Length: 519
Image 1 (cartoon, rainbow, N blue to C red):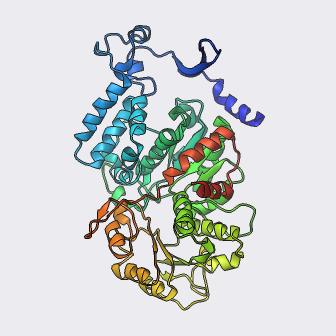
Image 2: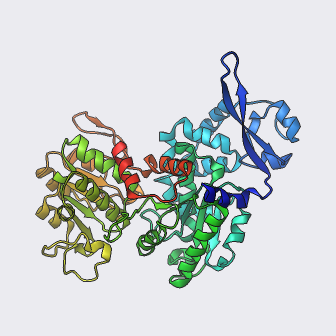
Image 3: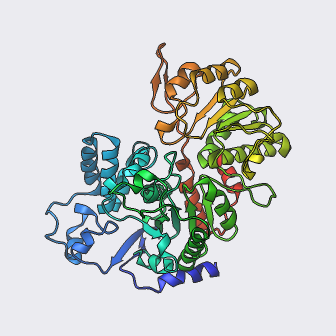
């Protein structure tokens, strides 16, 4: 606690333009009371109405308008936040597509943050797919066109030696959660470079909307080291660095300096969430920093205290695999055989979580691993195959090489198939029919993001095997199925709140396993 306090003292000694303080309101009779938060600010006039943290639109009272010097800068009418919400919803309904709705909501966030979160929390199920996946994927691809105002901190490879100074440019002093990406593996879309900023912005918006973390305590960051995306390099509207990605020691030095600068300024208990780094960096960075800093990657998480090669976990599968396998089918996890389409970060993480759950049921580690099979771009991962990474070797088995997923499914007869390789249509009708032929209730997770990269559609699954996701589907006999969504947003906002509230220094895999079991 003392160390954390000392770290935060570095920014608390600096002058601030606004501060939020709680004040006790005494109730009558019983001596109870309710707490209200008051914002004290030095800003006046236009600076208030143009600051999204301070602006309340037309909800400012007459007294507030006079004290803040904004009387006359707003129409004379006073509108409550509820009334403003109705105006926003009416405007929102006029937008013609999801990208327009995303731009509209981001504009609201830039103008009036309080109202933005009021809108989100009014119907989180409706608005989450707009500010987060799947719409945020398209927004990232078009980030150069939708960019209006800076939101987050852009750190480039050329800022080495000066990152501490860059952090001082960020206006908020009490940062508890940082979400950082280098834009190399954005969802299933690949290298989007600087355009990846939409992901940490969307993540941290849900920290607030779903987890209750104050938005002023959240900092989105993009580390721009260039891009290998030729289309972006040739695009005159691209807003990032126009050169190939810098790798090697220079990249590592940038990350080291960034991690130290963040914790020096905001404290060792500041949560740093890694997001959408490519496999080549994600595994080793988590392994490198997990025991030094308060950090996690909701695409990946390495098991603590073992000699195993790092394996990684996607949070949304922790929820859905556990519940589907053990509750819906009333069976143990260790009764299942799982085949993965894909063998990257997500696949390794899901596999490691399943292994942990099987071990908890009493199965030996080696027996757990034998129940999990992976298919990558070169076919089934088996022992003796050339160029296997250390992570893939853990799930390589003695078996003849097979190239096609359909042959693997037919040979192994899995109870579950999980798609995380962003290969659209990988779960063909033939595969789905095979799954249905040797399983009473086959388990199919088509998880690649965005939905255009999904391995199959909900209608295909329902029609052939009676499994879900996506929009509701009505079958020919009149039955209507409402698909669920495997989204890590069910987990990471609450996880972020818990970590920051408890001032954790390190985050272990047990945190994620417990989360999956509880949900």
